[in-house]
Length: 420
Ligand code: UD1
Image (cartoon, rainbow, N blue to C red):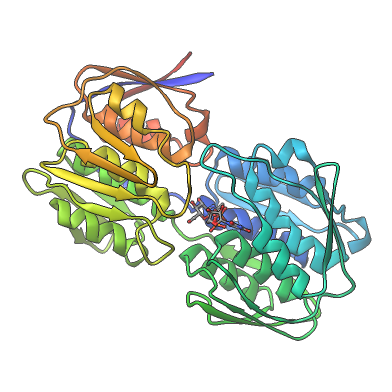
């Protein structure tokens, strides 16, 4: 297993190119079984979750190539050659595999997808996906740890989500694209990655409108054709490097940085004393004097993203005064807290709230990553800490950050990958 060894307290200066979005690429790649033709995807990040997704697509019967950041997917000679099963071995390593449920039901009328188990950040059930697909005519059984879904052609339906679930909205968007008639999704998630999925499907011939708002209308079509799509930039990677600039007191130009999609993050970091300048190439980020603490609550988009909670917490550890975080999306997403405390942070957790009292300095120590964004927060804290921080179990980071240590070294960080 690899670890990252960071010698901190060095301001970062230079530019970092933001990669394609993992959370947009996953559903967009998993939509491939819906399509009757060759698809070319550009700006696909080379990440562990993407390799897992391609493996799943191969198991489903499609051929893939991955060169640089371009993925090409070839459909099988006939739809009959598509496989309808997503095995547990893959699903357990990547929960997003459950996003093949909608496409398989829509294309084949059946799907056998391992039920994802719990994960480090909570139970994460898929009940909202299943209830909505049932409204479209699918039936489900749970057998030997697998969701067994069946349907004749899915039919359009009016669905009101109990909660704006990201994955649920994506599964339904894909399923409804090939359904019979019109589907209306209300209280749909508004994340930019969902809009990117809808843009992709529309480019392949789907008829989707309202994406990016909480009411999405999908008029089912008989088939989708091949085409080309460029994956949007990764707003969470960009947000993480915004914090890297601020926490080290440096200045970074983030090339290709999504900006409007990071409104809530830019707003909160701005309150803390981080300054932003939009340039033709991207966004310049620096810190304006001392940081001050803030109160943050995670919310569905356009609110503050739960995927940036751990990273802003690292920054809050070094800001003046007291601040608080309320995590409203996942019930167990404070695994990084005890690790940050090992570096000298002062944080108390009570239920879904974390109270952070800023300290003057953090001091390096060995710490253990528990999930993807928690790992990112430990790297950020390590960049600011005096002395050496070792972030163990860095494979979590490799799921979602393209060559993070290379990008950070180029802007002046002392960070190396080593064997544990
Ligand atoms: C996606 C993102 C993840 C992000 C999350 C919230 C991907 C691959 N992952 O995850 O990085 O943190 O959105 O922005 O894009 N829920 C249910 N029943 C369901 C579905 C969800 O109770 O059927 C609950 C979940 O347990 C969780 C909350 O709803 O507490 C949010 O889940 P959801 O929006 O579905 O997140 P994901 O799609 O899993």
